Length: 96
Image (spheres, rainbow, N blue to C red):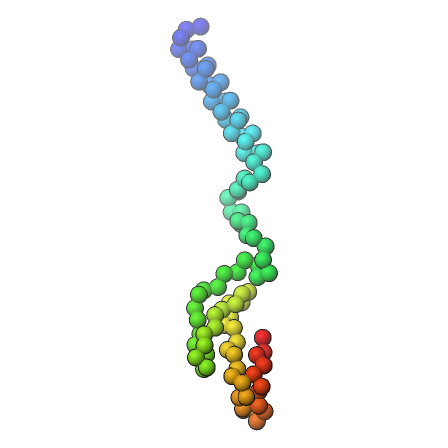
């Protein structure tokens, strides 16, 4: 064989080995990602929901933030001994 034929054969064998090694590593990688796959999220009670960091000003001057999973604002605390519209008096129990 001529030098050029040996060189081409070596290059072809080298590329086949590299290609086979790449396929082997891809197939045996437990962390392989696939296009369109959803990334793994840590398991949490709110299923990984992240809310914006907005704050709501309550009538008593305090602030409350959003809570997952629906990202609604937490209820404002009710000041103690507040007279409600129906005439009842709230003793400061916070309805969470």
